[in-house]
Image (cartoon, rainbow, N blue to C red; front, side):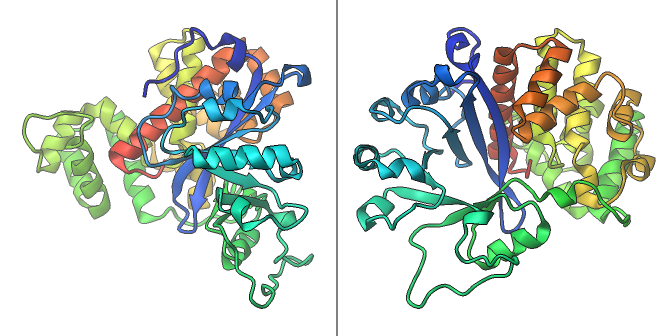
Length: 400
């Protein structure tokens, strides 16, 4: 599949507010994406098939799951006309199943091979034939019957078993997420918010130290022998580097077996980019990079925006504040300013990305207008970034 082209998408993508969240499994690995769509004006509600068709050109052929959530689209027969990508699952709100017509639509869609997820808890038990139409259930933490009001877990009723895997939403604290896993949740939408701002500092983990040291060396255009020596001190980095250089992304004529040769193939600039992709913020980095194209920004700012996004979650990953982290890496001043002080040219782009991830349309509009980026261009940039992240995940098997 190809990334979306701007032509022909104005009427749809220009009328939707979009946001995304990673799908995270029990091992805290990102295995997919949830993409939500909401009409800017209630009067602009579109048939569900029309919305989904606009996204068909987005996703590369990949196993990474994509949950498509057209939150206020009209559920009608246009769903049956949709030709879904193999990794796409469309969300159906449980409240809509009160209508027998929607129940019939869901069953016909299931027979047509369309994969669906049930969003929310039904008011009444659904018949088995209808339950079997859904691959997943998305349950908000406040709707989970097996969670007591004090947050503790309640045992399931005797003889009762869940008929489908469920993904928890609204788990904003680490303790809530752990409890949901104990109740059987296979994954969560997003990461707990209380990891976003560490309250205690601890030294970065060894792999983070290695990456940050290599970033400093690459930025300083250090001698290849020095970079080779630093990489060889971390077995995991060595393995990932050799695998990456030998992937289809480079098409090298002969298999690369040495770290020195791999570094020579990459060069300093590409090495910096690869190291950035070792972190969980790659989606953000790609999004900010694509946003810069909306304003025809120069290559230097695009590179800085990519690094800003790619490393913007590093404090969450390490539990260490940015001032301390950046003692280990000499990043561009604009990147450091955005991460530490939320100042400089990269900061408003980062704020826009965060507003979109929080599904905050008011703040998102404010940040877009400040940057003079249209809703259409913002959405196309987001879709292109998610497409690129999907491709990288499939190519390199990196957790991004």
